[in-house]
Length: 377
Image 1 (tube, rainbow, N blue to C red):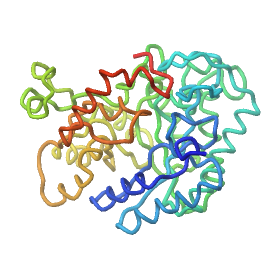
Image 2 (image 1 turned 90 degrees about the vertical axis):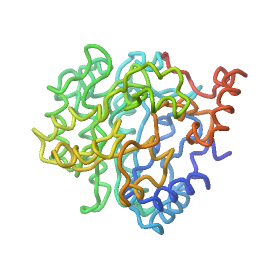
Image 3 (image 1 turned 120 degrees about the horizontal axis):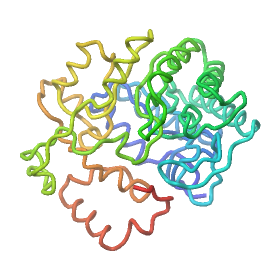
Image 4 (image 1 turned 180 degrees about the vertical axis):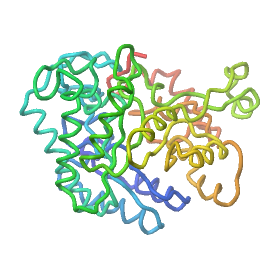
């Protein structure tokens, strides 16, 4: 079976993560690794769902460790948000996914218990591969966040029916993962604190739940959104991009727009910090050194995380350590996300020839011939 279908680690991915480690990143959280075949998000995604994948994952870890960085395995199940054609997704209830619109059936007790066991088995593989910790993905519309939302969890059993029971699956996953790894092994979680769709999950429900998950054994929480109506709900566009910056990066359509705010999940971090005794990781629109410093100095978060800026500048942390000030180069244009499932992860604004390749691919109808279920937006 080809690597694209098998979930195996690839040489380009090892090179990418090794380059990030060499660029000064202190700790890397991998892209989401699917814990069972039914939880695969898209073609080309790397998995951690069977033991045959451990050697490739170990090669990744060794590449990162050899350059002085730590690396956590991000464990995920796409749930009803899977974009793999022909796959029968798992969901808490028969509610169409808010992002893709695809109809789904509600999972059985056996399905749910199998998914829980898959997270635990994946955590054991992460330990065997030499990862420094695991990061459970419970945000952005994937399975755990679907169980946590009143919009997608319509059950009336031990897995849903009220606030407490909507949190039962997340708690079961944390318990299973914590029980599968050594006691001192770090377990963290990316938590969807609010839904980006109307009448969804709010902080009144998610903050107490976060506290219970910490009591169950989490060492840190990364805050994010839950259910998404569009990809930009978790990856806002044109953050901190004013007219001058737009002109420099050939974003001509943005030259009359106002910059979008940085650190757009910061209020979520504050809410968790105010009520939960845990370390908090803030991701989402950190685009200037002054904002990064302010977030840490204020105590709103203990760590700052970036994704898109490091796609464009893998050595950005080293630059900052050497005294770089001001904005990062990333303009949050999201071309890297638009090509998801079409091309390997890369910045499409540098070198400039990639912008031409993007335009040609679009004009020739490449995006209409996708190997993934499209989003509705």
